[in-house]
Length: 353
Image (cartoon, rainbow, N blue to C red; front, side, top):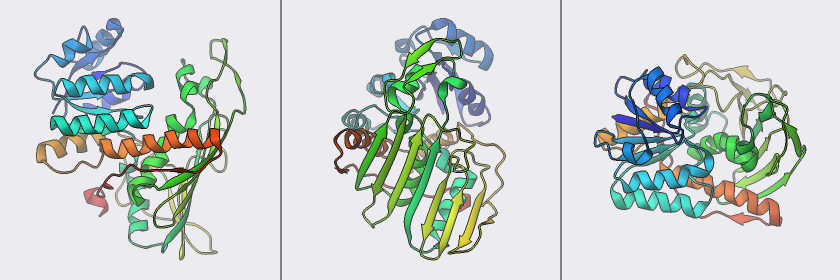
């Protein structure tokens, strides 16, 4: 599959390196609003530097566009690429509002093209192991899930924290456990949320003061058609080194599973019968890296070539966008918000079935 990347920001480096580890993926080049940045990436990773997005889309050899632009540009770039006849794989979120995300899903279908969106961390070894055990009934009927996203303070490590604080922790990192939980249990039905700004005044690594735009703390109660209740906490304040960390606990009638990290494929997975201590569980297969940024791309491109369903889809990503939008609406109004979008949950990886 011939791939070209749009957007040469912070995440484009890891994507470029991991794409080259997959022989069936060929990275043709890069496009960025800063042409010098695209040229730098082409020099480092190979391929060409396109002078514009239009030039990239005019290249008949490009089959799949990987959209790694900033949050606010996702919808526009995806739409232009689909209209140009390219399959699209986008970093999260698919769009900032649900109506735009649904429009993109419908446009791809109308054009006979495939659309997919990150995150794909639920394809990791630890995550697939936990999901397999739940599917097999290891802990019985699951009635409560606790998900933690304590992501710390972006300004402590990122050179440009403002875009993250413009959208808040749910849209930036809450999507990771949301993607996993919905991949496992299917579409959610409704939610109720609370949000607050804990620390409005921040300072960049360069010492420049700024004020955050979106709330930096959320608690969301998400309900599923089968009665499952998910409590998700997400913030840009508490360090991920906290005891609660960035993990997911699945609690069922027989016992519980603790996935230490919804992000890393090398995460620990623990099991406990009800009322007993957790014990480690062996992964379905050995994980060699924390995250392979191209794993979703590999499955997506294979699905296109094999004419099968991809494990990452635009419809799934659009459902996550609806959850994010409903979260902000509920937090503002105090009302429970009904969810309407639907998608087909993905199959387990072959080695985790």
